[in-house]
Image 1 (spheres, rainbow, N blue to C red):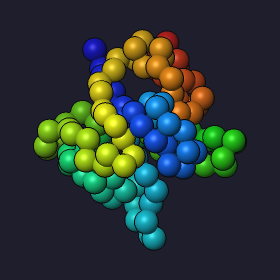
Image 2: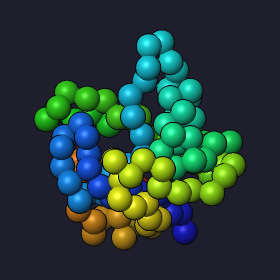
Image 3: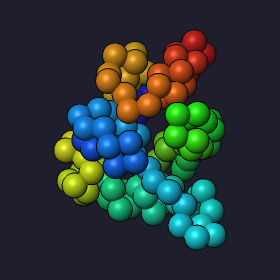
Image 4: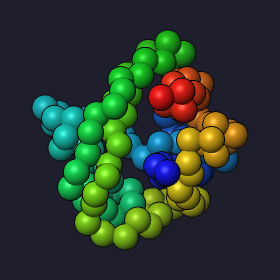
Length: 118
């Protein structure tokens, strides 16, 4: 069963506390999506993705943002919560478990519902 890593804490973009959010962040300057993925995972949970696949692009009309979602199937390092000012913990959840969480964005639920159907 696939598990997805989520962080709980403050969503600094939306200023929402104690909800589960995906690990990630913004592209810097002319940074590619791949480079952003690697940098954000290194900064936030101390892992370097080795094998990964872009599975979805989500649009949130509430804040006019675009989210690129990747599944990482191999990485170097042991995930740990490195940015305690943003996340109070990280956990692994399967799709059914993730659908029961209080998620930071409604579009996450839509994505996981579609994955559950496949």
